[in-house]
Length: 118
Image (cartoon, rainbow, N blue to C red; front, top):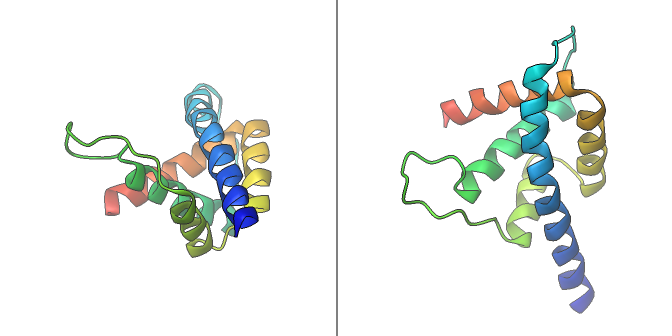
């Protein structure tokens, strides 16, 4: 039980350490030219996961009074699982988006569309 709790804590810290990077990549992606990049199924699942993450953390809210609360490690595990993403795939995608900001820009566009629908 302690190992599982420790591993979840590590995953939780890793995910939260990378979220500011993802947000900065969104800014950088806006400065680059969008090549003809086709998103695959993993990109689409990542976008769905990321929109759920933003909504759950309170980043996306119609109210100014909502406190920003990062989802707990079990909630993050559930979100990853719900979108059929493994921690390893999440890490691979993070690296890919750093290397291909034009792809990240398209993922962010999917996130925006998904959030508007919700």
